[in-house]
Image (cartoon, rainbow, N blue to C red):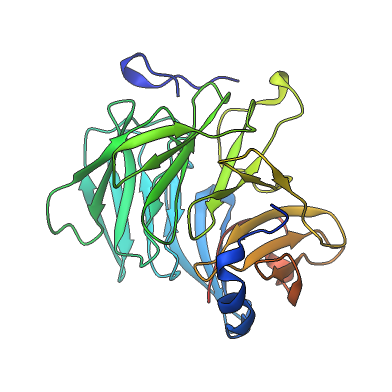
Length: 289
């Protein structure tokens, strides 16, 4: 299903070579993570305990911060809200609500939120409400925004789900990614903003409505060359995301619980973590360092 955006605009052999050393020497992950469950409830799992991060209402236009302590979402009436420290604050109003794929995204340091305004304009604002929103640039890629850890690139796919665009916030210019003809999800970018974790639908009849998927078949694509990088994991992948240090975490299906498989920049396995059974049917939003 195509998603239409207001103002007439419709919506190597390595995974991340420059970060191989840092990824290999980074401390092991504890299994702490943020999930999205029934009723668009965002929950944090840490140290064997669950806590509610946010209840985002009737629209799945949400994002969890990389530190797992904050959430941002767009309400059905177009308000960008942030929950942190037990308080919910409206940061921006007048946005396009009621469009599932128009999700905001957090910066790597969990201080800023990027979002779509007026069809093709990508904006950013401080999550604490200080300072005025600033324009990052214009792009046709406005669905399921992802922001690279180096802060330079914001990517998203089009409302027609027929292209992926990478916006260089330094120049304000967006370039269409190679190797993408149909796309229904963008999860995250590599730290240098070159590779993306995406989902490719089987055909144009399986595009969906742009809602955040609970599970999907992850594909890593080099947006400059269009090359797809194979994931060297055993089992059925249900999703994947990059950490700021370059490690790639692949979610793999299991009978009683799913497993997080941590890979270094060359795709070699570093660690396996059993997810809690309660998370089995929830969407994975963040894996916490």
